[in-house]
Length: 242
Image 1: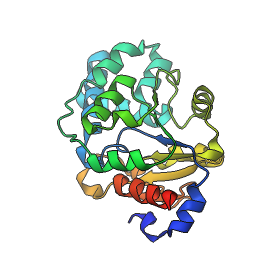
Image 2 (image 1 turned 135 degrees about the horizontal axis):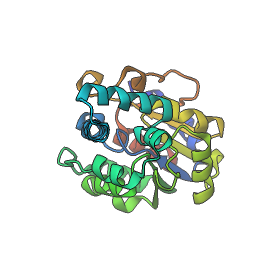
Image 3 (image 1 turned 90 degrees about the horizontal axis):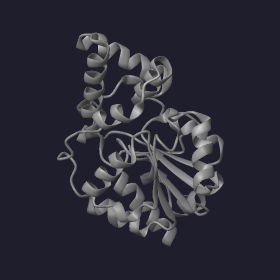
């Protein structure tokens, strides 16, 4: 259930009135979970690992998830353990079909009405982000993309990566809010003073996610939860304009 529906305009204005920077994760946040783009990326990573190690799909999958859970991304694990050059891996992983994403005029209108700058903070690449925002037709609303390359390949939830992001973009965390689909990635932002919004799937049974990825909505570092990003941003913009 979308928590914002139970919040008055006054509460929203009080919680978000000082925010001048809105930070959005990319995958499963800016586009709905049911588009299942991440399933394509996930499968391509499995294929890449199988080819790299010369193993079967099940073994590759086990290695992939080991790296993901230990290092935050499979790429980071391969870089640490194998000294991998990341460029070819990233190009292969993000070579996906974007036809599942359609233009989202409601999100575009809501972003336009939301005062302040908007940034994308992703563990993917700039090109991956641009391909998605172009399909959503919301490119114009974002000032920049902080990607895995800008993070020196150290993914969220590493503290150093948030600090690098804040410094590079001059973000005052006490005047910023973050939208993210993984609860653990909101721990550091909340501790630094950001308002945090967890974006959850509308129907979890229809998507490919691991159980731990769908947990954490009731943790104290999550200020708000929504299963409808356009509606959330629209109501928030309306409250701030009142």
